[in-house]
Length: 78
Length: 173
Image (cartoon, rainbow over all chains, first blue to last red; front, side, top):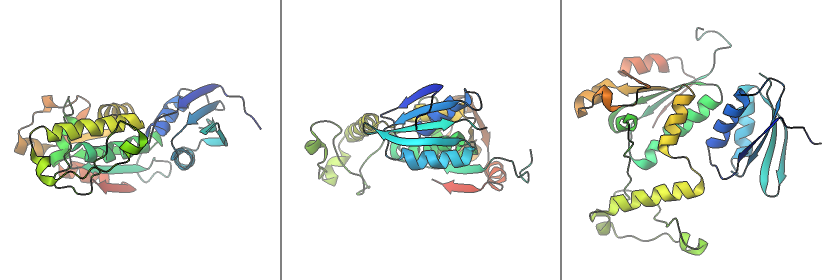
């Protein structure tokens, strides 16, 4: 299943905590209900993004690995 | 919003007591990650951590007295970068060695995609992390408020403890 992203954020090459920080900034600038596609290469990103989603109440619709990169579809819930 | 409010954000209280390049990182990383998750975060900069509030961060690092610090090169082939150079302790005290290791660590961090301390501190300010400078340390080591970035406040142990008393997470770094 693929989701239509309203915005794309590329965090390739960044290490902790920047993917989480950049995602927060991007999500805050979006409307509730919109979807952010975030790309990361940090192997710590999947567990960190899951924790981030639980803590902020936003939803990770999908997490996939494409061409060696982690791709997250994140919906702004609140 | 009072802290008894169930909707109040979680709170993280950090003490930054060390000012070397390596130890300066953990408080800023934890603070920015916490703030990114919507937590209310404060860092109390005390003793050697206080200069991290200065306009220019001059944090350096030395392997002297720290046998746990790997001495790897941030350039060259992967095999070369994998070598842990056995540097005799006596060489670590020659003039210029600290500057060299500091430069190598900064390069290593940069190559791997770690943000600089300046960038992390700016991000912390951006995310409304409270930066509290220790008044007592200022008095002892001769710092003035003008030495620090404008977004910090000055306080003492009681100021920090009041903030920390209602924190879910408190860490001393």
